[in-house]
Length: 65
Image 1: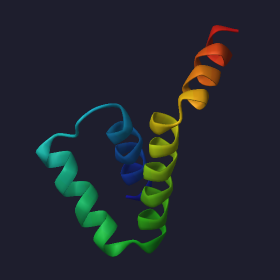
Image 2 (image 1 turned 180 degrees about the horizontal axis):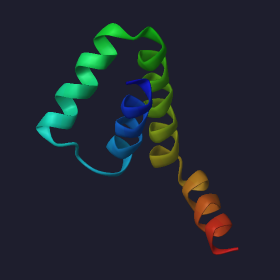
Image 3 (image 1 turned 90 degrees about the vertical axis):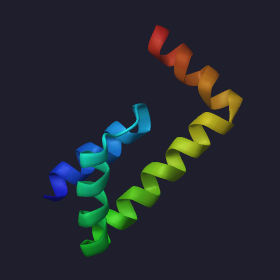
Image 4 (image 1 turned 90 degrees about the horizontal axis):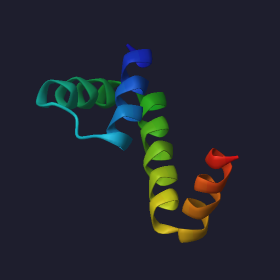
């Protein structure tokens, strides 16, 4: 189930999860400390990437290369 939770955490960064996906992820996170830590890391990386203009520019430049 951790693999599915990780997949959902990744999807959550790109789109809104369905109600079913949200519930499955919440249930798993309530029971799995490792995945809760992983979710915090995903959220932190997403915040840094979206709130730091230089990182967005560097990412676009890297993808274009």
